[in-house]
Amino acid sequence: MYEYIKGKLVFVGPLYVVLENGGIGYQLQVANPFRFSGSLNQDVTFYIYQAVREDAITLFGFKDYTEKQLYLKLISVSGIGPKSGLSILASDDHLGLIQAIETDNVGYLVKFPGVGKKTAAQIILDLKGKLGELLPDTYWLEEHPVHETTRGQSAVLTEALEALTGLGYSDREVKKILPLLEKENYSNTEEVLRAAFKLLLKG
Image: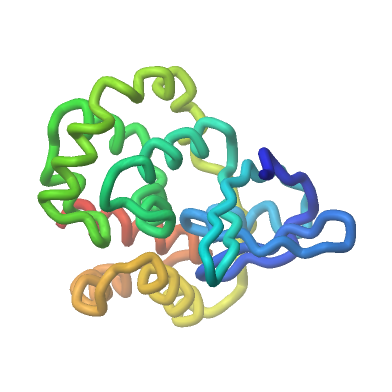
């Protein structure tokens, strides 16, 4: 079992990142890979959760220990699998997530892909009152600066839409917010995703 892996971030894509360590490239499923665009070709540390199934071994990466602990609590809930847990964390509003759980805000939770009213209620039932130890460390929610890109606006939007689809958002949900996204100019994919998550969660 891995606790963390430190190495050079060599690839950031819509669905995963690749971390190179000791000549081995580790494919890590992460929540919103484009959060890490600013660390490309730099040494970084990811905390790791390893999921083992009969047909696959998957590594999930987290930017720090606190994010990993929040993820582990999410996937302990019946109805929340490893990929569903990532989708919930992808908005990067982890403090908002904790507050929604503590205040019985089902409406906030059902806006995540694959989370219906029954699952949202289960999340609240299982986790309410159990996330307090994560609140002192919520300053890891701070935005990380990323390098500007010279890619065209259409390419940035395309990458972001692919990432949203990979996270489980439906074509209908994506098409609903696309006109609003197209009205703005973005310097990179992470900016598009941040705006998209706000629109999706606002519903």
